[in-house]
Image (cartoon, rainbow, N blue to C red; front, side):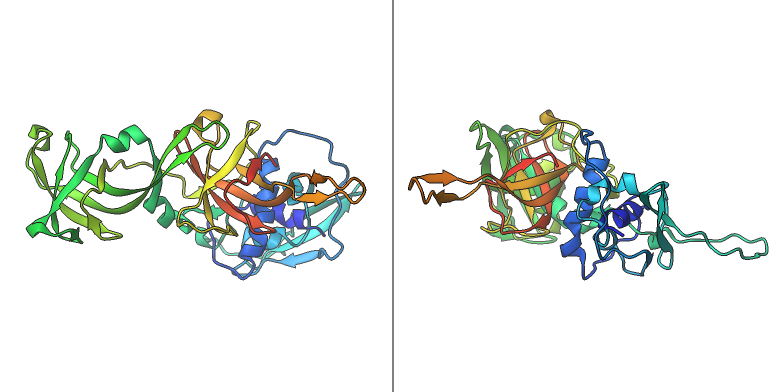
Length: 366
């Protein structure tokens, strides 16, 4: 049986049970690649399904299994799972038996039928938390809360911390701080600190400013809209992820409803001239589960859940006959999923890396 089968099985399962697993880093990329073409990549003739030589005929879903674990068992091109899965299951639970079978010379995977059991009338409660999952948002929620890309003009026009209480240079949870700027009716603000201005390496355009979230403050003024730009407003630090410094910027808190899981798919459009342009944290080598900033965004119709292949530029090789240097073709080096999209940039999570990745590596449709 092939890796793609398991992928199919698990990917269509209801996304409610994600646990860290020993195979997560190894299998994450396979799973994502599989779902991306299934989500709408351009159709093209791919030939007959070929299973891995060591793919099992029967697999019992284990507690702690993830979509990534199961998908890697069957195919090296797991994105073709729709061709393999006989039906569209909604829930797969630990203990379920998955069978591989053949029909008209084509392999399929299906959840085995349960033995007939006589039951007395009763309501059966099956906790959704036991279902085999998709990508759970809580896995990267801490990063989403701490990083974002902000328009340069918005950041420059934002209010800022003027002083700490009693002349303190650093403030913490529960402290009073004073800020100056333009005010309206907003009472809650996120405190952000600029890290770097991002630029598109293709056209040199500014993509905005990468900022880190350091905390949250609440307005103490009775009527903040009455304050002028020359007035100092009183605020209280209600959340703290780092020490609060003079000069930190204030952005109004905007409550939004977000999906609890990410459903990977192929981008609906062809992605051109895309690159990884930055790595929050300043690391030089990028690997599995690292977050990267991309120079593609909403205006290129990039969406949360889109999966992209990471390519690296080919190396220079010396031609033994002519003695000239020859640039080798690009090589596939990994897979990532887009999990947050801004007006000018977006964040991606690396799911697969077959070699060390770096800023500047290119991105394309799978």
